[in-house]
Length: 132
Image (cartoon, rainbow, N blue to C red):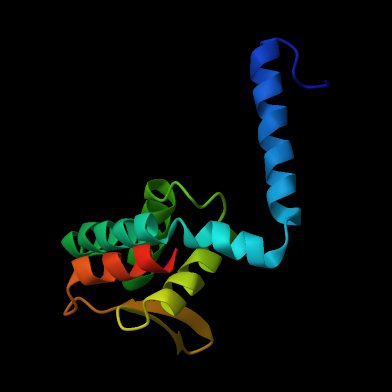
């Protein structure tokens, strides 16, 4: 293909396979997609919790910068999310599956996710694993 000169055949095939998988993932039925995303919720919860510990350690940063860092860190740690939109969808599912721990609220016109640290995280993980 154009623009792939100099790349190995195996690498080009791997890229094509990823592109095909991404297209297929977007076209599967919504319920099957939600079920697939639900399986990643325990790992996402761990990522979110780890991200909060990272960002709380750097509390001298402005809030918007902390939120951006938190999003980027969560994307990096969460193996289940391939895009920001998928991460948002997973966070919505997380709020549905563990509403006592994670809930979505509006701050002005922005939707943000709030985490409660006073709940035993092991109970949250058990609840998420049971819901998959």
